[in-house]
Image (cartoon, rainbow, N blue to C red; front, top):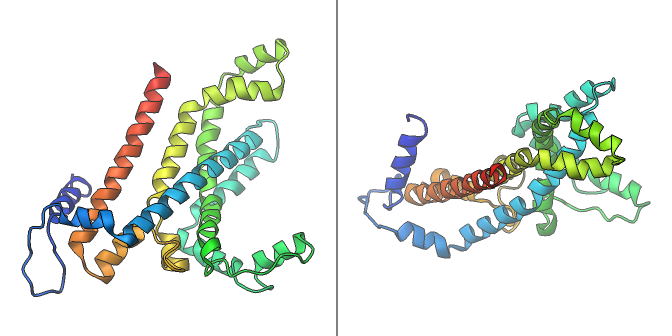
Length: 274
């Protein structure tokens, strides 16, 4: 009530005004004016497009990689299973600010940048060095790769918990009927993990719409606004331009997106239960 509901109600009410801090003009009620301006604002539309692209590619890739890692470490008799679980989960424990600073060094331009050097070595010198964080076609994929690396461990743990809930009897019965590993994976593992996969995928999609730390630390929305996001637009509106009415309207928009995604998750899980 104190930290979620009341602030959201206040933001919702302020979004119908033109409140701007540090101005001598009185606050005016503008109705849906803030929302109508957002609908045609090129910066907001560009940010929404970037969020959609990020949410379209990162969750499937991260979920697929997390499922692969979860299957790899779901081997009770394997001595390396526990150390690998800890190793894959370790990036989740690091704050994003620290991770972003380290990856800024990894993305360093020129042939001596770690990623450029590695790609050049793997391609036997055919790779041309790029400035990943300052070239429009590379900046957003660079942020996506960082996010996948940092967040895949959490998804792996969630999926590992789902894998450990699958009855072993199902696999034993399938093996007696002559089913191989791939058939067991398709006919037993994936159906039993459906709800967990839906949850992890939509959770990652919601986090994709909250993308901010990487943008603020590494690109500041550039180059040419190709990495700006809704959260970064909200930050600039509130703390740089002090346009609180516009920032509150963006807040309501983000909350609406998150509620919509949560409703999709609930619908998908309910259909499975029915």
